[in-house]
Length: 84
Length: 84
Length: 84
Length: 84
Image (cartoon, rainbow over all chains, first blue to last red; front, side, top):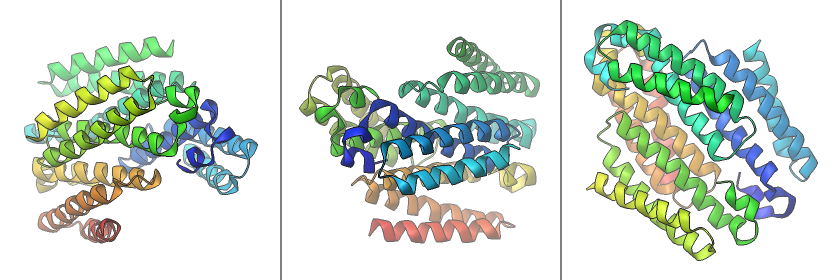
């Protein structure tokens, strides 16, 4: 989250930043719905997988964010499994 | 959120409590997606409307929560408009 | 939160961005502690007032954010009253 | 968070429930301040350690929550190290 403002350039493009902030938020929400064992967690995890995938692809496009690409991709995969 | 543990009885039934906690969480998340102006906010608001509606109905079933019934219903309605 | 990535320049300086993200987070947390009527809310509101004040001053320094300056200042004042 | 409404009795006492909800919230907040690398994270982690300790002790008092006692205690310890 703070790597990007430090790196500047493409890293602070509104679309990229918005995606990252949305991804961080959605991951927390998904974790909370699993914590409270809500039947809504499947839908939430499904949406989370979608946002994590987008974020992973956008980190790849921006470049120099290999760790984020991998983490977001892994998170998307694990959310997809929860949503199944 | 804290009225129910104080009231006890049906107010602390797991299903009711889970719904209230999920509702509070989803409302915050929806507000955040609107704040960051994410294109995902429509989906999120749609899900939020669904959870708020459920919560409003469950507060009605439990009884003695007229204020919550009204607030959750109004919130569901406003989320539905955002999602449209 | 998204005005700044759009505006660019000083608006995306890491220190400014970090402050804004911390401010948004702390406000949510303070609201949650008041919602659950936790005795810890005073401490939390006190910290929230401090971060809101800093954010208000930094928005003033960056410039072109008069609305944020006013909102963060009002929020700081209201948190200070909760913490008293 | 949902074990307690299921277990009922002392597990749904308002003070205990409030503490648990505050603890879950504060842990998320502390994680967020570390994620954005905010200089405020020390204060936040210090407060988080205090709430986690209280929660650990209260879970011990309520009984039948050995896992929570250990987790909250470990979290308090790790927050204290971040705050140092």
